[in-house]
Length: 444
Image (cartoon, rainbow, N blue to C red; front, top):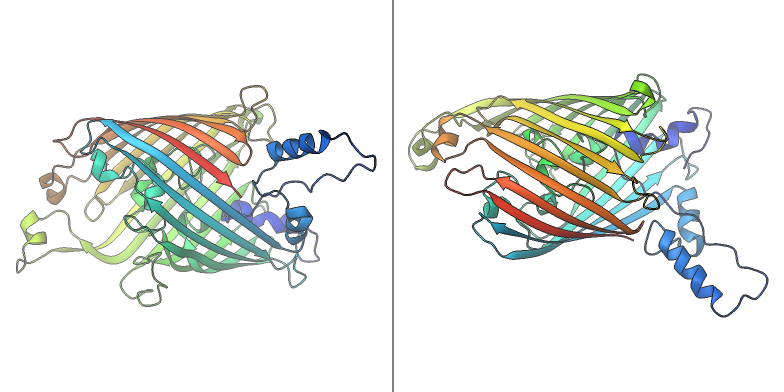
């Protein structure tokens, strides 16, 4: 995936993968060369089964075409996630739900296309279908299945969530602009053991990104910014600066609201540590929006009864921190091992219904001999809701939750994940919910 150029070092062609998590395809090896000696009748089936069992995608290398396209700067990624999940106790609805989400990623590398170095174009389409265990069922602030939020919460549509371009002008500086999927393109709040949109790893939203960001940073919006690599190595130190539309939505182009109703300013830095020759990361970020938000510190009647004056709060801010640290890692260059992670955040608590947030847990991958692609996680989170009057009137309280999963790699392209969650609701009149789930992820 790399290529030398006069302007950029060898690492330049994979800058995109680390500093903005554009999810470029990790392609498998080309199909094996045919044996000139005619094999026994059973040999082709054995070779086919072996190729299937080790391929990172279900459709393989397309007879070599996929690798040829990647070598020329074009990669294609298709992922299908299906979740069967139900709340057994304590919820409003104890039935089982089935839902799915599909995600298509296309990436272009201008250097490999023979055009100019340092240019990357990302196009991502995303949709979902069916029903998910959402926040309404469990009484939690956020869904027990993060897939329910993307591309739009409560709407089963297919949307174009990302069309953005990044250009590096030196090994230390790049700029991006376009329609952004913020969890992966801007302030991803990346974490080695707990991050994503529910396709892999933890299912619960609270373990995939810091929910304190949700108010000021919409998932899909127009924006622009810069990526700074102080050391020139994206695996060591990355700083991202961004300006995005606070009112963006996956279902619109965004040009009707961009920078008119509110603008969010973002800054985030992620630094790689090597304590005791074990890989870890320290991340710190901040966001501020100048939009007018509903002031939660007022009587509920002011907000819902027509004719009564409604108080607005000018602006909202949030800061967040997360870390991940391997405690056992046989090879520092590999993600196989065992580690710990944590997230923490604080907001103004006047416009933002979440005042404080924290999560902590452990994660591991490939710890069972012969099961290098399996992974697992155990985590605990706690949300401290705003103490403003509207939040208190609606019965919101401090809530917490636990999740444990084990992701079984049937093949590198087929992942089956049993999952259990115990969730204390944020609403006082509901009981603790126990949620069981089974997720199937297929990479095409």
